[in-house]
Length: 197
Image (cartoon, rainbow, N blue to C red; front, side, top):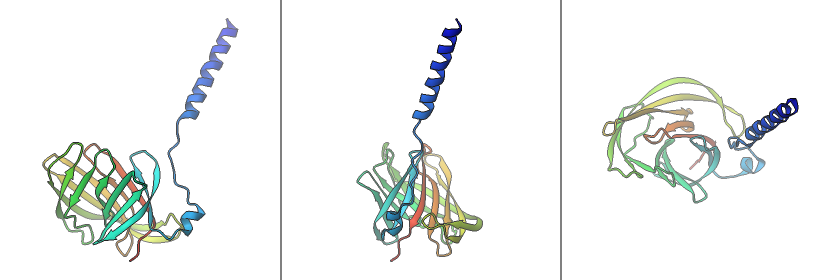
């Protein structure tokens, strides 16, 4: 009896250890020498809990920057705000986005794919939450930031939420957290190397 109990405990313990060890850890980008020496603008981007990936800048035109990771996912952003996605489960596009620079309320249009929708009005309002100092991820140098909260509302589908932007004195977004669809999908980005004209 005691022998059977001991074997059972050992088997259960080893199964628990195996299950625990087999849980994949979240992918985190390590800052390598190649990243530090790279001349390209790049960001660390994370969708949901899928782990971090490096996205490179493909183009910058009329204030809109396009970022890519291979051919899988392409995103376009304006002042740090994602305004178009390609390659996600629920792609979307925002037009007439005016941004947060003057903290003025504004209005744009948003359209979803999967399921498809028509363009719907989306309303934005902004407020300054706080000021502080943070470190750049690439070299750990300090800079002063303002944390801006963006409230949005799409009346047609009753969708609303808050996005956040950590912005330097030149209004460049170094970090952002956004909700990108009515299902609660989250997006986070951290600038490694900023784009300069």
